[in-house]
Length: 452
Ligand code: MN
Image 1 (spheres, rainbow, N blue to C red):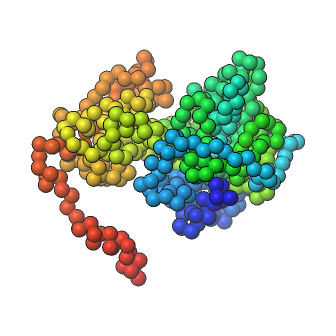
Image 2: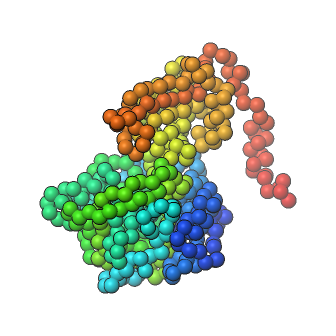
């Protein structure tokens, strides 16, 4: 299959982006420590994980470059492809004999034994499933939804779910009002495009599996689940079929989260596993929690595409966007614009700040600056900003409780840095001094020759 994790792994291997670790690693902290140490490096496949027969992979989605490799795209095409994914969903294709159903377990399920769920941060409440895509259907409309949630291993066949206020929580709430359990498939071990699609934006009822199809440019192949009325990506490694029951809550957390600090312990929903289907030699995908780049990027890239798409409507000269790693993929954006008139940098700041509650700081640069290069962004701030004119504050704007600095009334001061060149100085002032572009290109092209 070309839409599965293994297809991406093959491409990573060919590109020198897959590291195989043969040394036995402990799923408690050690495995995550390796993934932290290699946080900007290749995907890491752990061949031997203590206490488990399953191999574990991590750092699959930790760089934008790997996402580009997995879809055979140049880096610059990622953002447009994600926007396309939101705009032009492609219906799924149901197939039989799906790889994700080679093995079926319907009795004596023991998830702790079956899955090598690692522990990540020191104060986490226990081992967590972190890369599972939860697929559910609205109890009335039947429309599908996908989303990724942390799941604490509670018992042999139960997992805690942190739903946050999402489409999934709306579906669960409606099922509860109808006094029905919500059927859920938890799908682990997916192609990067399916992971990103599952975090993409849409209305309740816009189907993330169809957005995955749009990213691939062809229908996503899915399998009918065996014990619930649900579809799962046919090529995924492991599927947990089960349900969440109305009103059932259990203590969950703490867990090191996106903003790099712990989400507090609290009463949250529970998933009951009724069946496990998987590949014969299933690979378990683990995403390191806290603000590890893989965790951030899976969230940040769809967010960038969503903000970019909306901002483009009122600000067509917007070129590129980076929800930065230091900003937890949530709080800070760097955007580049093609500036033609004074005041446009500040217009871009205002436009972006109105589009997302959590976004609280925007840096605007000219389109000659790569928004993904923090040194060049700082260079633009150093050489193009007059602070008294170009730093702007917007007090008491709405945020949400993920920002722990929020005022009691749920607001925070947002701000922007307009690091675009002031137009009152001649262009030569800002000319970037370097070798001629065509020579640089030639050296890049012939790079191997300089190494031998
Ligand atoms: Mn949704």
